[in-house]
Image (cartoon, rainbow, N blue to C red; front, side, top):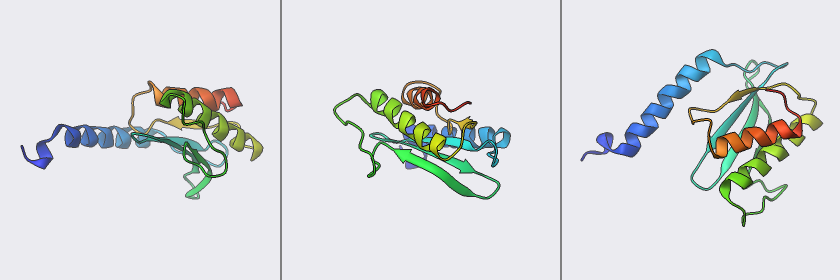
Amino acid sequence: MRKKESITYKKEMARKRRVKAIRKKISGTEERPRLVVFRSVQNIYGQIIDDQSGKTMVSFSTIAKEEKIDTSKKKTEQSFAAGLKLGEKAINQGIKKICFDRNGYLYHGRVKAFAEGARKAGLEF
């Protein structure tokens, strides 16, 4: 089997296709920035981005140095805690309304937990 025909390659290409379709519809503004989520095997990362100016306003991940997340918990619990911390940082900067960009991932598991944590912190989707 060649590399381009592998299952992981096909999954990644399908996710990239979904990302393009989602980004056609979603764009972050200064009043309502975009919360984008990236999920790796071990960690989850979140950024609040203003697409008009091209700047990241707030970011947080499970490996952030300023505030540690308890790594003895399950990954979904870590994602919820990371979403909560990101939401708190955003509220402190005056960001209340956002649009959620799941970045081609299914709204399930760790991505859903991250979004629920951000909602619990006070962000409105």
